[in-house]
Length: 143
Image (cartoon, rainbow, N blue to C red; front, side):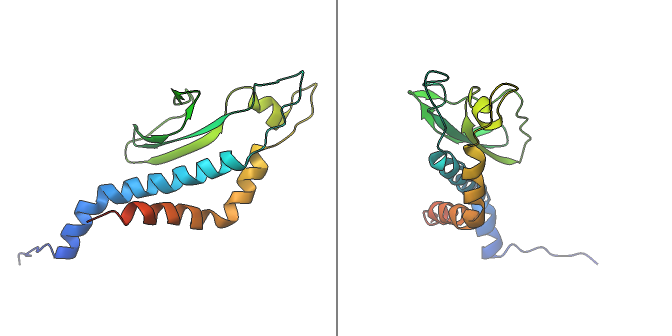
């Protein structure tokens, strides 16, 4: 017996929207990363580290293609060397540059002053609303 496959209008529409859905997911995760970075308050006390931890950023990728990002002083944020991107994955990261780890985690001589972790913990309970709102915004532009 041979099966006849017929594509319904819904299937055709979903196939055309697949890329938009992927981008909507990336936009949602990017919005969450931006919210976490925006709500973080680094402890930047002079004279140690003055000006080192004052700007954060967020970036999103679909596969290995960058689809969203913030800038710091007009420069695009680059992918961290340790981050591995796989085809088909949607990835978003947010954070601060290298010196921030010393504030966040402390050192052998300096106490930790977490600022990014509390911001992430605060964002987690309503992450579905943040991601959903950004996805709805993207998908509402679909024909």
